[in-house]
Image (cartoon, rainbow, N blue to C red; front, side, top):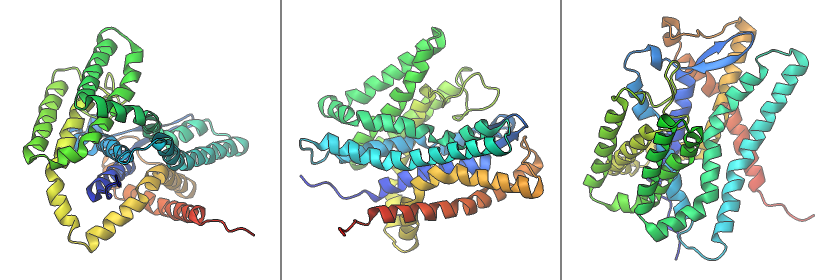
Length: 363
C-alpha cells in the first residue's frame, strides 16, 4: 500500500501554528531585567479582556493534532521494521538542531561567566531555551507513537475517550488530593490526546461539516464552563498572579481548547484549500512557511535575545517591565527587530541542511 500524498492543509496548520507562537513570543513577552535575573511575563493579567486572545493564539493543540496525523501517515504502508525506521528518521530530524542550539547557548553562558560574569547569565540562557519545552513532549510522543498507533488500530475511538477521562481524573488528583505527580502526568496525557485525535484526521476531514461544528461547540461550551466556575483561569497561557497556569502543566481547559481548535480547523478547511488552489502568492507563502517554520521556532528566541543585547550595549536601553504606553507603542519594533535578527540564522540553517543532504563521493 503506497503512502498517501502530503496534505497541504496539514502542512499549513503545522507551520502556521509554529509561526503564531513565534509572533506571540516576540510581541507579547515582557522582560523584567535586573542585575540578578531575567524573567518573562506578559500583559494579559493587567490588560482587561486580553485573555480572550489566548483562546485563539494558544495553538499548541493544533501542532500536536497535525503531528498525530503525520505520524499515523508514516505507518500507512506498515511492514516489519516500520517502527524502527520511523523512530530513527524522526529522532534525527528533531534532536540534531535542538541539541546543537542547546550546546551553543551553554557555550555562550560559559563565555559570559568567564568574561563579564553577570549574575543573570543562566536565567537568560534558560529563558532563551525555554521554548524547547514542547519539543521534549513531542519527542516522547514520537517515542510512544508506535504503541499509540497500535492502540488506535485496536480500540479506535475509545483511545481518545480514555485519555480524556484520564486527564479529568489526574486533574482531580492534582487539585483535590494534592498529588503533584498527577500534574506532570497530564503533560503526556493531554498532549497525547491531541496527538491521538490526529490519527482520525482523514476521517474527520471526510465527515460532514456538522462534525467539525460539533467538536467546535463542544470545546467552546466546555471551555466557557471550566473558565467561569472560579477555578480554572480564563487565560490559556501562564499569567503572573494566577494560582496556577492552564498550560504548565496542562489542565482540562486545554482539553476543551483542543476540541474547539480541532473543530475550527475542520470547519474552515474547505475555504483554506480553495485559497491554496489559487496558486501564485498563497503557494509561495505556504512553501516558505513549510521550509522555515521549525528553524524559525528553534531560533526565534535567539534572534530576540540578540536584539535585547544590541539595544542594551549600544543605547543602554531595556524594554519596560510593565505594559506601559511605551511598551505598547514599541510592539512593531519587537516584531520587525527579532525577525531581522533571526533571518541570518534561518539562512545558516538552510545552508547546513543542504550541505548535509549532498551525498559524499568516494575519493
